[in-house]
Amino acid sequence: MKSPYEVLGVPSTATAAEMQSAYRKLAKKLHPDLNPGDKAAEEKFKEVAAAYDLLGDADKRKRFDAGEIDASGAERPPRQNYYRDYAGGPAEHPYADASGYADFMDGDDMFADLLRRSQKARANRPGDDRHYHLEIGFADSIVGATRRITLPDGATLDVKIPPGLVSGQTIRLKGKGAPGFGTGGPGDALIEVEVLPDTRFARDGDDITIELPISLSEAVFGGCVRVPTATGAVTMAVPKGSNTGTTLRLKGKGAPKRGGGFGDQFVKLKVVLPSPPDPELEAFVSGWEKGKSFNPREEG
Amino acid sequence: MAMTREEFLKSSGLTVKVLELWIEQEWLAPEKTPSGLLFGEIDIARARLIGELQSGIGANEAGIDVILHLMDQLHGMRRALAELRREMGKAAV
Image (cartoon, rainbow over all chains, first blue to last red; front, top):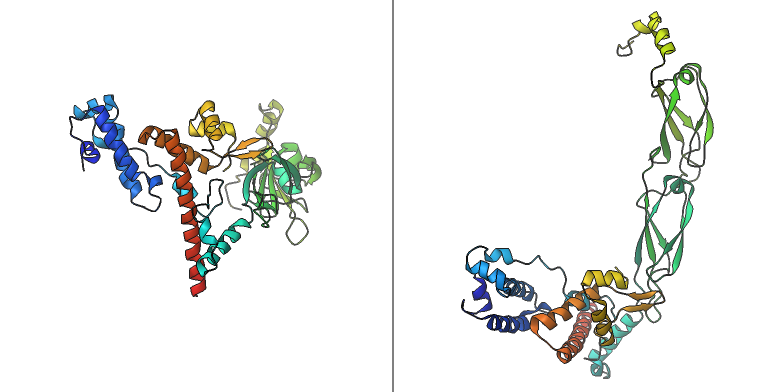
C-alpha cells in the first residue's frame, strides 16, 4: 500500500499549503463529477481524498507521523452517489441542458433526425410514479375504509381501502403520481398498505381467528357470550360442556372472498378460572371424587 | 424521494443562508410547489459537489458557475449520446 504522502505525491516534509495545492491538483483531475465517463476515477479519487483527510488535518498528520494511527484509519466511508450518477441517468431532472448540442438538431441528416426524435420522446414522457406508505387497523382491513393522505406538496389524496385487504398490498391510483411532460400523462400513486397487528384478531387466509376467554360455569353449563368481530360484537352460543381449545365457527364473519362471499371467524375458547382462587370452588373440588381420578394426560 | 426544505437542510448540512444564496445563483433548482420547495436526491448530490468544488478544489463563485453550466451541458450530451446509441441499436435490428 502506498503511503498517503506517496498518494498525494509530496515529500514528508511538505507544508500544509503544499499539501493542499497537491490535493487540489489531483482532485481537479480525478473528481468523479469532473470525469463523468471514467468509472475508475471514483476509486482513485477516494484514495486521494482519504490521504488528504489524514494529512490535511494537522492533528491527524502529527499522530500519523508518530505512528499512532495508520493510513487505513483515514479511510472514508464509501460514498454512494456522485452528482454524475443522477445527472447522467435517464430520469428527467431540472438541470438537464441540451444547449451543448442544440445546433446538431437543426440539420436534415439522419443524425439530426435521431437527436430530434429522442428529444421529443423525452419531452412527452409520462410522469414518474410516486410511492407512499399507509398504516391501517385490523378492522379497517376487513371492512374497508377511506383514508386521506397528505402529499409532500400539501395536496391531499383520498385512498379507498378495499375490504379484505392483506398487509403489504399496494393500491394504485392512476394519474395521481408526478405530472407528465408534454403530452405524456401523469404517473400513478402507489400506496403500500400495512395492516397493524391486532391483539385480538389474527388473519388466516379469508378466515379470522380469535381466542375467547370463558368462565368455568360458561364452559360447564354453556350460555350466550359476546364475541368481538371485525364488524362489531355478536352474540354466540357456547354449547354445554365446552373446553379450552374448543373451536366454534361464526359463519360469514371473516374477510370477503375474492370470488364473492365471506370467510368465517373461528373462535377458540379458553377456560379461565377465577383469580384469586375461590374458596367455595376449592372446597367443592376437594370433595369431588371423580374429578380427582380424571387424568386428562391419559389417552382414553 | 422528495424532501421538504427542512429535510434537505438536515440532510445536506447547509445553512439556510447558504441554501438561499445557492438557489438565487441558480446553482440549485428545487421544485416549487404551493406548499414550499421540494428537493430530490439529485439536489443533495449537487449540493455536495458544490461544496467540494468550493472547499476541496478551491473554485470561486465564477468558477463554480462555469463548471456547473459546462457540466450540465456535458451530461445533456451524454444522455443524448446514450439515447442515440439505443436508437441506432433499434434501427440495426
